[in-house]
Length: 308
Length: 324
Image (cartoon, rainbow over all chains, first blue to last red; front, top):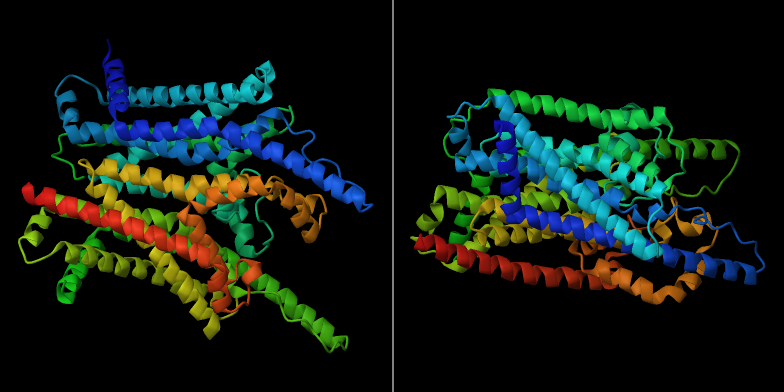
């Protein structure tokens, strides 16, 4: 068995034993299961609200407007996942990245590993592979839960096209979460304190999830939590015109926009637009991956005990 | 309980936190982010103010004698800042609570403190006063930056009444953050491994600050369509109320869900005081206090609960650390 495989296996075992990781994962899976129910409940109510509105308007002799939900695809019931994954999923990803580096350093395992003929690159690839496998497993679990929720709500299995869309959505989400795995790992490699590493990673997450969309789309922090809120772009100041130019590289917004297209828009793929939306996420993952690799190669793993 | 001991402990808490790079990082992030939020809103405000002045000039030139006052309220620019206090302020406070326990454990200073004539109550109130001073420092910095940016970028300086309302809103923010500080202290004190306590506190924060309000918001029928369902259906407010009266059970469930979130009560109260919620704009504070007594009651309940939990956490920490 190669060193990469041994390192990856050890990290996966370590993750499975961490109660904090299991707790966060539990919250994510619970919210995934609830997402379908919340979507169904809101949708059923709003249809009844529309029917009631039509009755009220007809009684008053006014024309009834068309139903804004008539052509809503069935996958739109899951659009809360577009919010839960960047919130809960990203924090789970940060914890994966954090544990992948910090746990070894804290236990002094890195000193033992590098006393053997193990290459730094094997260590990096082992950690990256384990993190990617963990993220993939979480996405598969979320996919299964979403399929179960849709089956129960719609009284039938999703169609093949819907299944492909769901798979694409969770594939994209996995790529997005890898970004935060790397953020967690980089923060852990740059600091000697566990708390500092966690806070730096959470600060980066706040920047991506809340602060950047406000600058690029005028989206207030709380408005970012609603999957159907339109950006508040009433402002047309020179300052906002300048900051909004950064929107194409605002990874959080690109993820949400593309996810929304996959789950709620029509069936058109639009390769050019899709590439434009995936590219910043992929580029950031590659850049952060390169930085992590560099840090692993240069890090002094013979260090003493870490601070809590 | 002696006030000198409490002040000494509070001073220790404050100085230790200021020396910590984590605190400086958190304060810096908070101030930069709130400055960004207020700058964007202020630029927008200035443009609206300029439009109004142009309208006044045109109307005066056309001989119009009665000109409506501007419907622009500078305190409403604080919305982004208050939302950041709601989200990031809570994390910052959890971090302060965690660091307070982490410092004592890693420096082994609690045993030293407990070797002096210090009682549990002194430790509890000392930490609370120290934390309140720290949080006040962060929020005063954010408030000062906000006032300056509204005046310089937005083009309108706040009046005395508005400053009082701003001070009240930020004082509510201090209390709100202190509650999360108590949560961070309690969970860190009861964890053998400190980082685990921090992660659990972050999970609680995620649920209370983000998930529960998010569920409540997305269950709101009016939030299902960009711009609002009833606007899209061209339904006027009285008809909207009449229609929603048929969904009282659903609305009760949705509202009850939001009621469990401390964050939602903080938001409702601070938005009412600052007039961000249009319904309360320009209304006297006595009326707002009366109408928001439910939110005030919930915040008081959470204060009692988290205060008790922090008290228990510190007692446990003191006993455990003395033994060790």
